[in-house]
Length: 455
Ligand code: TRP
Image 1 (cartoon, rainbow, N blue to C red):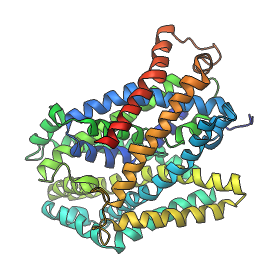
Image 2 (cartoon, protein in one colour):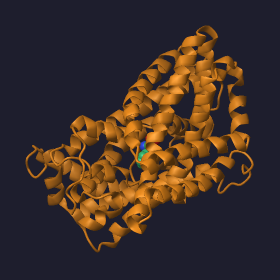
Image 3 (cartoon, rainbow, N blue to C red):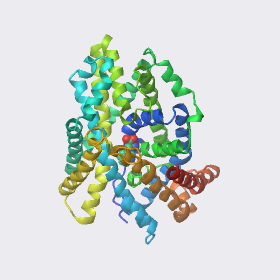
Image 4 (cartoon, protein in one colour):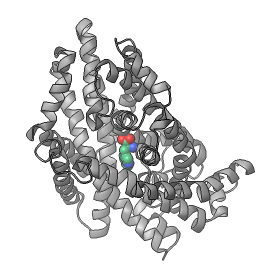
């Protein structure tokens, strides 16, 4: 086993790195439109429960697998239990999921880039609030613009990965994530003052459980995994960099809670404005890209300069958050090609760029020229998104909890979570956690997985 592995410097550094992977388009782009499509406040409650009861135990399992094996996800389970076929399946999924995810993530990254350009040129603030939806629809249905921004976004990320200059961007994200946080809080305060927003506030705080069915449960769990970067090999890989003296439970819980907070704040900032703008809450992937410009354009009517500065900062911050997520996704495939086939990092990056570029291009065109092509009612981007978060991520997470619960075993888990007995780990807490890992999480994931296919 290699023990020379670099370590994260301190507890805060661990939490920052993991929260950096978790906080991204998942919170700001995906969460609000999931809430809008699956029943508002009731969906949020289920999402919170899913995060605490299922995702947090899965998160702890992934960090444990990573730190105990000190390997990237592809090799982690095979190192801990050589010869176990399940471990090899998990290794394969930990390369496949990030590549598929990176392909369409880059399309949405491209949209953020486009809106950053629009903010910088002053267009977002100059347009009237009524024009916002048409501007978005024209952009998204034209074949070339979204395709160009997708390839530009992917190209920037592939370049960063090829050159191994990630640390520069990551330093930048330490500034942009807090900036994003304050901007979201500011937007939240402003959006509840918009005329017509009261209905949106109601929608976010009054749960209507008649909207909830087995499908919404599956989407809530899928969103929670997506948002915490679970089931994609990412947290296992981060886990392998966590110091042996670090407290896994505390770092995991802190990451889960900050990610949850970010998503809920983003939802609360967006939804009142959705109603104020008269946009359909179930509008799908375009929801945020219509609503946020509406907020800035309304604010711009009275305070054009402040609004322009905030719009630029906002779209720059989410573009940076998206870049850091995209590079960690591409890194998986690039290091796999490099390690397994001895390709240079540059050639590996080129290959990954071409593959993700093509798959992403199809997703991008699914809003324009390929809009008529649908499989069970879903366009290509929605289909890939569903495949990742409602099928593959659930599957890989299921394997991780079964691996820890049944193959790694209780004593090894206790040893890893208590750092070899040096950390106080209450018996009660440990037993509850172990029960959640061994029984609650696998049964919940399996049930949701199955009903997802039946319904
Ligand atoms: N959690 C990220 C977000 O919210 C998306 C994501 C899912 C991700 N899995 C990942 C990012 C793996 C990096 C690595 O945007």
